[in-house]
Length: 588
Image (tube, rainbow, N blue to C red; front, side, top):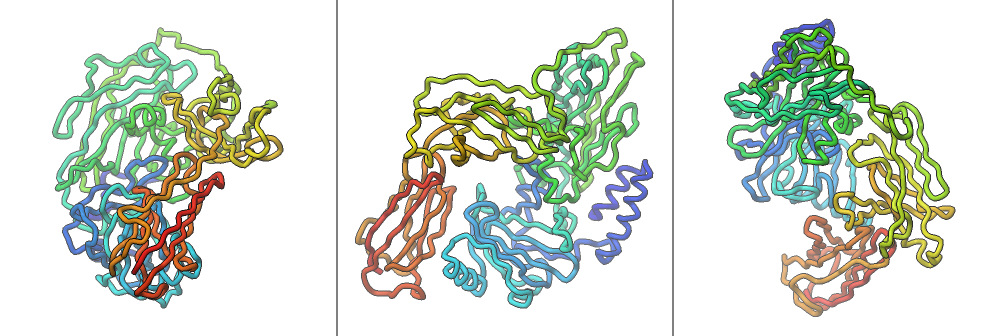
């Protein structure tokens, strides 16, 4: 079925008044999108068959995937076409993110995005290069006038690539509502073959109250599944004993025909005794809410095992809009001592369906466990602070997804690369929605000449030998910074400049027409903060690819004179103002 919203309606069978209201909106959207066949609205952005390596809404670190990734045969240079008539309203070139990307506004109320391109068409490339030289920056974010680059449906706009934060050649493709820049699932506009049911790896049961237990323990229970053809059970044959309110979760993913990549599922439902308690459908979301994924998933399990368990209950400060229906925020409370069937089902866009069934029983005799809450109570809706003589921490309102009983302590260290006590700022398994301020006082014996080299460092308690740069600047005797990760913090220092080394050429080399001059650029701690290259004293365009720690320069006759000796000066500066200068000559 290709009508995504009607599919949702049929799947849920309009079980609540909220669903009736949503269905009325759906009918309007279907009319707005010119009838029932949405596949006629956008044409394919590639000439080759559309095969997915990633789908819309699948969980990622700190966000939901906002588009789909189309495979390009493991290579760059596939022709990329505009999906409909319109005009290019934004062009981005960046060493990270979508890399080289085009944004097109269409006449049908939609916009499309094409990311990780290797290059644009000649006219667009020249426009971008002119702006890069004018701004003296490889990274640009351009908004050309509406009439500058008009495009027709199917018109060539660029070539697929691997630019930005891409792990391999592919085309990242998005569809958005133009009026609010809200991403929609692009699959609804294309015929994507998919006959594979989602896989269910495990389910989880969580104590959801202060005195709740699962199997008489105050901790979650994860049960592996067994089954096939969409029908799953759990490894435990006897009913799971619960006491007090509990929540559930599911580790599930999907495969799509002709692709080995794990993709996300679209719908997850929770039923108890065939009564719907929870339902979500990832058809669209706002960029402003995508970080709430850290509340939607079992964040601790993601950190510990890199697996995504999607919870079927809501934290108090979870403001995601994907939830179609919840009763008591998906939290179940039973007091009858009877056996109950739990079913968690999941399906993809093509209505391939899988479910897992298991049983629970409420223990009415077990008194529950009422542990004493330790630490500082921090209500999620309030500003919370910690202040001592050597550390200050300030959490803005709604920084947490639920009230946290905060644990803070510190410990001395004899490490020679740390210039403060080690501060234990709660633990890394609790997610934070937005940045909080942290200030740490360095040791008193630090010489003033090194103040601008000091920084906050983050220490992973699983690998405490590794120090991760966490920013910060000296202010009133403290290193003051902003972060959104809880865990171990201290003060470190960076006095080592970046590395600049020619790759496969040397001083005085001759560069042939069309050849690329490559230079290795990397920094071992605080990271590259800025760089600039000059040829014959004039700013030159060096493209930066952090994945490969490589700068590339192609001699351009519009900016240097062909046929002679040229001097190159390249300067790289890290995030603590340590710099390296490379000077060499070449012939072209």
